[in-house]
Amino acid sequence: MRPACEIHDWMYGEGESLLDKTISDIVLWANCILRITEENQWFDKARIDRATTYFKAVFYNGAAAFGRGETPKRTDLEQIEEKEDYGA
Image 1 (cartoon, one colour):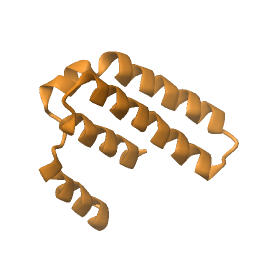
Image 2 (tube, rainbow, N blue to C red):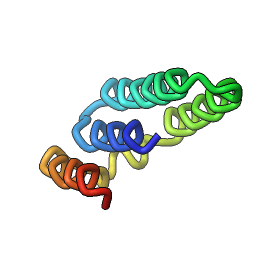
Image 3 (spheres, one colour):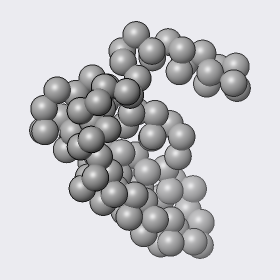
């Protein structure tokens, strides 16, 4: 789920409005569900329930983090990609 979370964090860093936050949260949930269902495991329902709980947490309680600007900005994207490439 790390890539889904990193995309979400980046979107929080770039976002400027409540609509941007809402879209970021929905993209997080959608990416989690896509990742879960592509693996097709017997415990998918439990994982989907967990992803939905996490979505609700960031949707209802993420405004403070969204407004702080502590999430990665566009300039940090290269560093994230380097970590992915080198396994850091």
